Length: 565
Ligand code: HEM
Ligand SMILES: [Cu+2]
Image 1 (cartoon, rainbow, N blue to C red):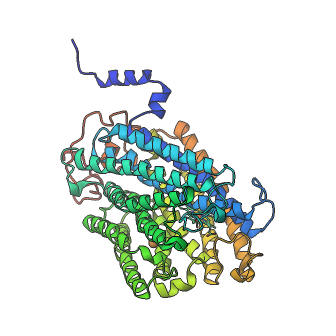
Image 2 (cartoon, protein in one colour):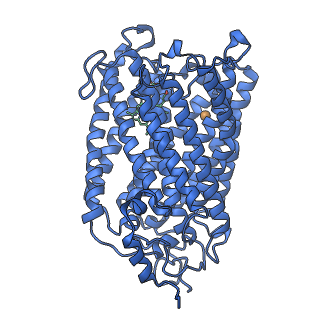
C-alpha cells in the first residue's frame, strides 16, 4: 500500500542524495540561485583585481605592479576590456537577475520551484561554460581580447589590429553563450510568474522586485536578438574573412555600433531594474511604511524598459551620425530620466515620515539611492549631444557609468545579500562587521570616482595605458588625483575581506534567527530558513498586497501576505 510521502520522509530521502546531486546538479531554484551568486562573487574578485592592475599602471606608469608585474600596452587593453565585460556579463547580470531572480521568484510568489527546473539548471550550466571560456581567453597565445567591451570593428574584427587571434573569437563565443543562458533563464522567470503564483497572488500583489526582474528579462529578450546576429557576423569577419564591417569591401563599421548599442543601452536597465526592485523591498521594510505609489513604480519600470529601446544612438554622437538624429536621441535620452527620477522620488516618499532603522541592508539601500543619483545627474551631460562631443571618451564618462554601475552591480548586491542572508542560511550576518564593510566600501568608492570626474572634465582621455606616450591626451597637473583614485581602490579592496569573513563565518556560526527576523510581509519569510526543497510546508494563500506596514488600528506594524486576518 502506498502512502503519500510525509515531509519527514522527503527530508530523509534528501539526506541520502550525494553532494553532487544536491549542490552541483540540483534543479532546486535556490541552489541554482546560490550557484549564480557564488560564481558572480568569484568573478567580481577577478574583475576587481583587473581594475587594481590597470589603475596601478595609470598611477605609477611602467612600474612593476605588486602581484602582477609589468603591464604592457596589449595587456592593458585586455585588462580594461575584460574588466568591463566580466563586471557586466559575469557579475551584474548573473548576480542580480539570475541569482536573486532564481532565489526569490518562487519564494515570493508562493510556488515550489520554477516552471522548468531542468531548463533552469541547463541555463546555469551554459553560463558556467561561458565563464570558463572567458577565463581561458585570458591565457591563450596573444592573450585576452583588447578591443574594449563594446568591441567596435575594425579593431575587433581583425587580429592584425588587436593582436589577439585567439582571445577575440573566444571572448565573442563566451559572450554569445552567456546570452543563450540568460535567454533560457528569462523565459523561465516570465513563464513562472505568469503561471505558478499562489492563490490570491494577483498581479497587483506581486512584490515589486519580482515585477522588475520579469520586466528586465523581457527587455533583455527583446534587445539581444539583433546583437546575436551582429556577433555572428563579427565572428565570421574575425575567422573566415567576411567583411560585414569593413568599409573597403562595402561593409560598415557603424552597423555594429547600432546593433551593439540597441542591446547595450537597454542592458543598463536590465541590470538597473532588479537592483531598484531590491532597494524598494528593503526601504519599505526598514522604514516600516507602505511602499509609496506601487502602481506608479510599476508603470515607470515599464516605461523605462520601453524608452530604453529608443536611446541607443546617444553613444554615437561623435561617430558621424546626422546631427538631426543626434537631437532626436538627445530628447529621448532626457525623456528616460523622467520615469527613473519618478521612481527615486517614490522611494524618498516611502522613507518620508517612516520609523527608519539603519540596519546594514538599509544603509546599502540608502547608499544606492544617493550614489545612483550622482550617476543619473551626470548622465544628462553625456546624453545631451552638445556637451557629449566634448566629454566623449574622457574619464568623465568612466566616472559617470561607474556611478551607475557600482550602485547597481555592487551596492544593490550587498543590500540584497545582507537582507536575504537569514533566509538563505537561517543565520544573521554580523552587524558591526557589516557596517565596517559598508563604510570601508562607500568612502573609497567616492574617492576613486569623484577624482575621475575632474580629470575627465579637464579633458583626460580614457583607454590610454601610459600618458607618457600621449601627453596631448593627459592632464599631468591633475596626476595626483589619479594616484588618489588608485590608493582609494586599494583601501576598498582590503575592506572586501571584511565582507568575505563576515559572509563565510556567519554562514556557519552567525546568530541563529527565526523564519522572519525583519518582520517582513512577503511570502519568502513565511517559509522556513533555509527553505527546504519545495519551499513551503503547506502552499500559502495570499490575502493582500506585500507592503502593509504600519496599518492603522492593527496591533502589529506588519501584516504578512499569507495571514488570513
Ligand atoms: C572596483 C571598483 C572599480 C574600479 C576601480 C573600476 C575602474 C575602471 C577603470 C579605470 C576603467 C577604464 C577606463 C578606461 O580606460 O576607459 C573601467 C572600465 C570599465 N568598468 Fe570599471 N571599475 C570598477 C568596478 C566596476 C563595476 C562594478 C562595473 C560594472 C558592474 C564596471 C564596469 C566597467 C566597464 C563596462 C568598463 C568599460 C570597459 C571598456 O571600456 O571596455 N566597473 N573601470
Ligand atoms: Cu546608453
